[in-house]
Length: 310
Picture (cartoon, rainbow, N blue to C red):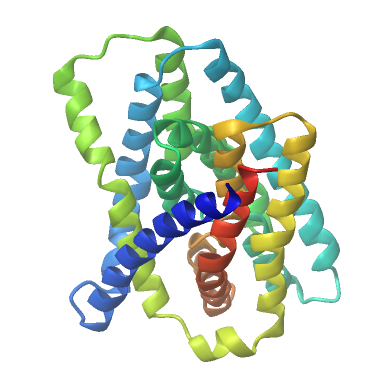
């Protein structure tokens, strides 16, 4: 069973990374470059991803299992981030300069939940995967706009508490949950366009992801020892520990798989963007995301397959 699951998940990861290769090639050919992709990220984050989440929630069948799963997903997401924050604080302590420490901590805690985990959850699990993983994205956004910017700015940034709720990821969940609970009959002329817009989320996100890989300094990715530590924590240590906790707490099935996919995804691509925004080392943030992304081709299939058999 483990081998069968491994093959299935590895195939889905390979497909996603082949789409990323399109973005990589487009950037090298100067057809679609990293500068172009930054505008597309705004489109994805502010419009496409929220529509994907809302559409999934409003089409999810209302069952007691799904209601319990919704709350359990929130607890799993919160616990995963809390554990990551604790691990990052211990490993990347005061012996590291405050700015570099902030990048390493951010890269350790925050996974590429929206642009890689969500597409993979859709491919491996289906709509239930998006349903549960969307809750993880909501938790990600709340913590990224608070703890995340505090760390990556070297403790200088002021936290905008409006963004705790008024960000696309959180708003989409807040809209989606009532639609799921009320089971409103949404007209076809509304639901069908939402479905079509949501369908471009995975391929477009991976193409954008490929442009970031194309601009990575692969020499630095290989020689910087700290990056390997970040990748180990992000790709192996944190997700394996959380998978064990999920198992002990009785979290199983598609919910456990979705939470594991989100927990074992590589470093968030916005690590570099936030680093640039808050006058930190954007290249280091990009290198951390790139290295963990390349290594995740191996680690994600193994860990997600393990989630189905333990």
